[in-house]
Image 1 (cartoon, helix red, strand yellow):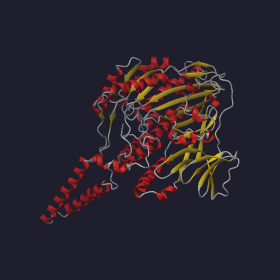
Image 2 (cartoon, rainbow, N blue to C red):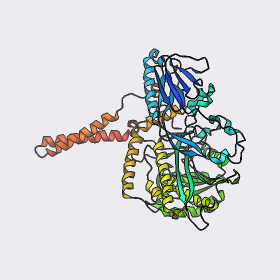
Image 3 (cartoon, rainbow, N blue to C red):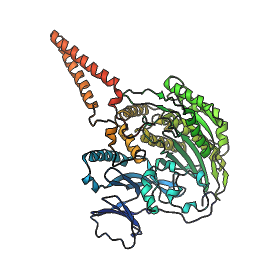
Image 4 (tube, rainbow, N blue to C red):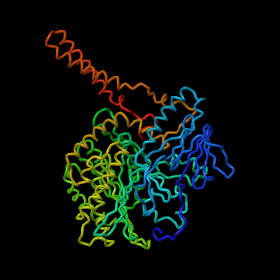
Length: 590
């Protein structure tokens, strides 16, 4: 029973599946109910539900799979995404939750043989994108309950909602494979349609004063403006922001359930930060006549979903960050039902003064405590609801944001444990070292996972969350992550952005239209390796000739010549940095 609703038959997906391969089709069927399943034609990709009379003879290969995430139609065929391995990572309200550990696209592309050379070239690029999709991190699902809905929203549903197919229960904002499920939904294959969440799922068992407490942390990544760190910034014209994530901290103890929601998201203005080989690309605010409407739409949507919003802005107040922060503050002054709180995290907390977050808490504590949290008693009665939300942001909404959210979560957790009787009114959760260590590890792991999805590396400042201070090993790890981010942002994330746009349905493939690569004028040859070879070669020859320059004037002039060539190549590369970077080919930044 959830939130006091009466019990009813709960919808459940088939969790044991077999994939049968035939010459002309693939068949997916339930192990428990062999007559339930569907086939997909390897030539045209058409789907047909199985019936009692369906017979295809002997399969050439039979393999175990753990779910079908959906299908996608490319230029010359259909590809079915199947889950090939999984790992149970905990439970959500008593129902097992699994992490996808591997998946693959099964090709139904026999029509590729009859395609033109340009279609085959386009299909080859799209297939490289599908390979990237197969390695998507942080995917979770359950066969017995939907995990995209937070507990408070679940309580608002009418009696009997749990008997509906999981895809109908799900919050579409957080269904990673929403676009892939379309054809399965069309053929009413409800028992096979898995809503997959991208984000993080962490669970740990605490034992406070010999009293068991289940602590679960779920982060749900929104798909409306999904993307990579530098190719998806700010908001679109509808008010959807990059890296928007809803995080729920769920506490369960002897039938009591307490839930705290927090959200993060990029500053909801139109702004961009285009990669150009520099370590920190220029940050530019896009002047648009609808900028104010974008901010208004964003916060109106938050108010409808979560109640009164406190926007905690953790960006620096000088330089380009300061200009963006000032523009955000100016727009927030126009909104009547949202509070804007600036807090220069780097200036106040520095590299190790984690405790200075108390200064931020002092600013917002009254409103934060008035917003409260959801609390449900063992009988399912709602004792109180969360009436508002904290929206935190920095520039990436990763590192500073995660530190701040964990601090606020710890404050709320103490209040919750006091309310349900685990702690006394004068006791603080942070004084229980073993359990507090587990709590901090939970938030640090979550921060790493979200950062991997957006930036491609572990979170920076993870030690502040895990230990409350920076360590030497943490500084080294942060340095390596920063270098890796630079490489990925400049030389890999353009392709990764294309993969995300393709899987989310932002780019529609038109088989009979012109090639998107011809339209966008992209050449298959990358000039970066050539430029790199010239620079490295020039530096090497310059170094060698300089060593011999003392022998004669000819060697000296040779050194000068090669140094000039090398400097010229470096100048050309620097001036045309954007052209040497990996850029998205399929969709515009907005």
